[in-house]
Length: 83
Image (cartoon, rainbow, N blue to C red):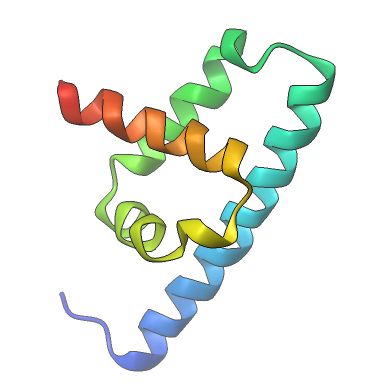
């Protein structure tokens, strides 16, 4: 199913907000806990990045996120690409 321009814009705005909020969660949680041990957060992002719309968004927008969050998502992508 192809999306029209308005629907593409809506999906992009949703992903902007969702990724931005997730980055904030990641940064805050990283300060109070060991992110590497939080399997639930990592599993959620493995599932998200398994969806093409998330991957496409990330490939075009990752530069607007903090380097540490970029590393977290890119590590997840690299792991999934190896499998």
